[in-house]
Image 1 (spheres, rainbow, N blue to C red):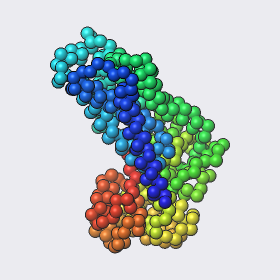
Image 2 (image 1 turned 90 degrees about the horizontal axis):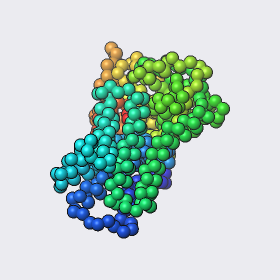
Image 3 (image 1 turned 120 degrees about the vertical axis):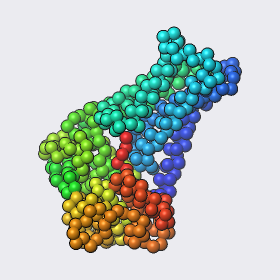
Image 4 (image 1 turned 180 degrees about the vertical axis):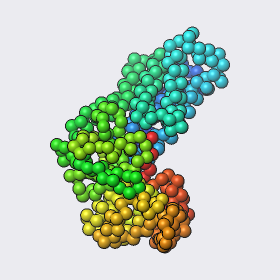
Length: 444
C-alpha cells in the first residue's frame, strides 16, 4: 500500500512537470495566430520556448518542497535537475543555431553593438547560461567554493530568465497580444519568485526555529557527532535515514548551508545527532562548535528510509565509511522500537581503527536480530573477518539465496565508486531493481 501510494505520487508530479513545461507552447497557439513563417524558423522558435520553459521549472526543483521530493528522494530530484538543465540548454542553443543555418544573414545579430535590444538580450542570456552550466559541471575542477557558487548560481539563473523574457517580449511574434505578454511575464515571475522564497521567506522561518549545540563528540574515522536540541519549539519529526540542511556560524540568509544525514533515532525529537566526517573546509569546523551556539536546520528531506517499506520481512544495509550515518539512524530507531526482524549490515572501512560507531554496533547486536559483517580494506594482523571490498562474491555469501520481489529491502550508502559497484553486483545476482535503495551525498 505504501509503495503504491509513493508510485502514484511520483506519476502525478511527473505529469504536472510535463504539463507546466508544455504550458507556454500551448499558450502561444491560443487566439489569433500570427502570419506563417518557414518551417525551420518556426521550429527554432518552438525549441527556444520549450528550452526556456524547462529552464524556469528548474527553480521549483531546487525550492525544497517536501511534497514534491517525497516520492523520489532529494538526490534523485537534484540528479534530474542537473540532467534536465543540459537538455534545456541544448534546446535553447538550438534556437539561434537553426536560425543561423537557415538564414545566415541573421549572424549579424551577434554584433551586440549594432544588433537590436531583443538580440542583445538573447545573446547575453545564452552566454550567461553557458557560464552557469559550465561552473556547475566543473565547479570542483575550477576550485569554486561551494557557498560562492551557490549564490552566483541563483543570481545568474535569475538574470538569464529575465533577459530571456525581455528577448521574447521584444521579439513579439507570438506574444502579439497584451494578455499573452502579461501571462508569459507572470509565468516567469512565478518561478523566479520561488527563488525568493528559498532565499528570503524560508530563512525567515528558520530564524524562528533555531537549534542550540548541546555537544560535539569525537568519533573514529576522523568524524564528529554534532548533537543539537531545539530552542523554543518542538523540534523536527523525521523518518530514520533522512537528512537536513545545516547552517552553522552564520544566519540562514548567508546561503551557507550544507546537507548532512541525521544519525540519531527517529524516536527522539528532543535532540538530533549529525555524524560528520572531516572532508572539506566546512566539515573541518564542526569540532569547533561550542555548546550553546545557535545553528539552523532545514528538513527533513530524503526518501532513504526503512519507514517507506514498513512491511518488509527483513532489511540489509551496505555502508562504506561515513555512509554509515543514515543507516545508524535506522538501526537505532529499530532498536528503540523493539523490532526483531532479521537485519544484515555489511560495513566497509579502510581499517579497524576507522570504523565509525564500532563499539555501539556491537552493542546493537544484543538489541536487534542483527548480523554484522565488517569488511576491511587494510585489515590488522590476525584479522579473520572479511577483507578487501564488498563485491559480488561477498554479496552472494551473505544475502538470501532466493531473490523474490519484496523479500528483502537493501539500503546502500557510501563512496560513489563503492555504491556503483554494489548496485551493479546486485543486478547481476538477480536482486529486483525496486528492492535496493541508494543515498548519494553529492547534491550539487
